[in-house]
Image (cartoon, rainbow, N blue to C red; front, side, top):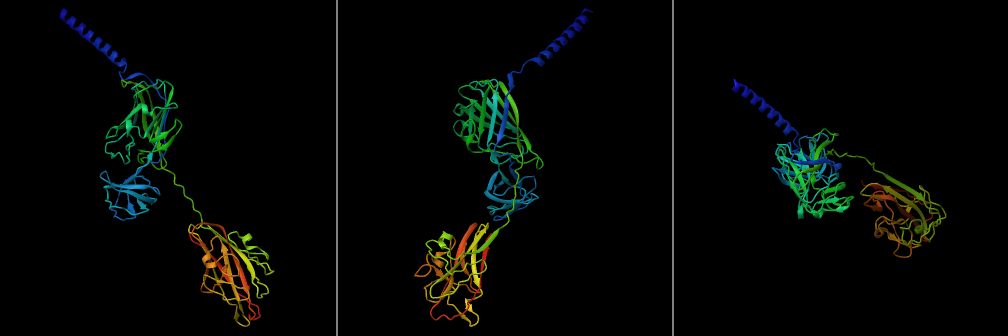
Length: 483
């Protein structure tokens, strides 16, 4: 009987010990954390939030092809993107210029040609979008010598492609971010206004299936005081505490998973640890990636062309400074209009009238200004026509030697065809007259034109044997823009 009581009492004691032990375990502090606090004002600003694009080919593509069929997985390829085609982790074409993508996202058009044949289902067309990350936070507890700043990026999901230089669907790829002396060639670290990059050593753990990518920044020397603002540039080779002055974006943004117009948000854990890996302070920040907005506008092609007559007594070079060294004045006594040029009473001197022809166009390949006519300047009652030249380069006029024609001068006029300087008196201004079937080019350019003025002089002189009469002709000017 005494033995039974003893056993019962022993069992009660044992249960009591278990209960006390359970309470002890429940309230025992963690061995990995000191008086941990939250990092304040923590953020990660990226230079571009555009997701990377990556999708398999949905049909074979021949070498030299100008387009490829792809699966619609919400990847968006934009004009001027530099894409790559990869097979089993090896790039087979690393410089494909994108022209556009179909609205259904199933065809990608190239600005050049495919440098290698692509295979349906196995080859992947991708554009890695790289960004610089600026991570900033305030440390409540400071950081001692040999302490660490640990940046933990999202976990790479099992089954997701794992390639340091190509985009992932579930995390950021480091893309050889950590390199050079102390791993800090592409990373700068600031403690308030002080650049402490030389005091740290940076190591990285690449993401792998089921594991996150981790950047560890070890403070080899010095300390960071509590309340300090820490700023870390990931993808920067020259900087100040306020900005990165030489960006070298390395980290590759993930691809799109949400529907268009909705951001994918990614978790970044920031921790500070003492030299014994005890967590001092921590914070979780979110990074958003979302499609770029394509902006499109149409500028209609434009062409304006005006003709204006010159008044009598107009000095040609004063009217148009591009008519270099031209000392001619209009002298017919009659002002020209946009539709009529009256050369007055003609003798053995040279009569001159003029018009300004002005062209503007947004055609990237410029314009040409040409002239055709109804025929020579003729007295229709007798059929007699004033002598002229219907070809270029034109003819030099001499007072008293019968001749009629036009001379062009201005910014876009060829002086080898039309000469320059004064009318008459030797090798100066050249004159010619077009026919119905043979036009003459007065001016041309191969770029956009803004109010380019060409001055046309109409000049005539008669000889002592030129028959009296009323001479008439019609000239038509054509301005042609090239877009």
